[in-house]
Image: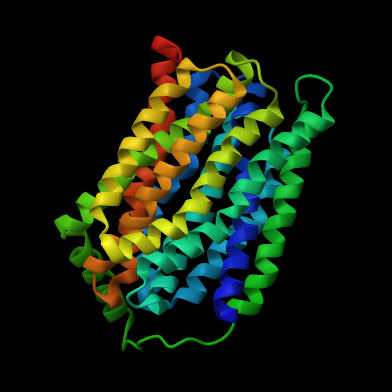
Length: 371
């Protein structure tokens, strides 16, 4: 791997570590601490993804016009600064506001970083995207159990406000490390096609969006990813609470369940990405959807930690099958000059699923419990 690619992965690692520390299992437990019920907890988890629904597509399209590096740097700044805002939260309403703002981090950084990888990947889009994704989401793997461990080790019983604040301080430190590396990586000049006026820039911005958004193949593929991501969002919101309140596990074990699912995805993603380059994207997407459906439906029937861990591993493998192929398939369809817009479209639909998963799950849990 080249040095810039390694640096890009390092930025992604610390950014995702920061975001994971602030999210699962800490966020749903923090919302519960603030007095939120299941529906409100689902909304708190999903609201940051709503930001992505509205801003991933414009961010991706903007990067096609003004350059990837400038756009990426804005996203990394959000990763670095916003975690410290959680220290001022005393009620649920402020939590929702800060979660929405925090969503700008992934909304801006996510599609642009994927477009950068595709710029250099050539025919190895599936493999390179999978390697990049696997390396950067190691931050998710580390963040979930570390956040749970901080809560578990510092609290005698139920976590207090001070324990939650400690997690968000660590989250902010990780975000600052990401920013320091990004400043060195992203301040070099890059080639961007010059435009004569603001009107021409806006025209290119809109034409890219129209061209990509009108392609049914892009929309169908993105919708498959969005459906799969509904289950990811639901698990992220309620697996920690289910593990602690129903299965009787501790906060550290709840974090491990999420972490082992991410680990399964990380380990299998590069292999699946290479397989999708060689054998085709669609069969892997189909297999992955089936694995996710079966494991997701089984989890509410389980109470044992090791059985829940097994279901989480199967779900992680299924997620790897889908995600290693879907983004690469979208890239195969689109023109190179619209990679940013394509990933923005893909990310928007991805986030619709991710945001609706916790909200829908919260409503269903209120009506029917976890079964």
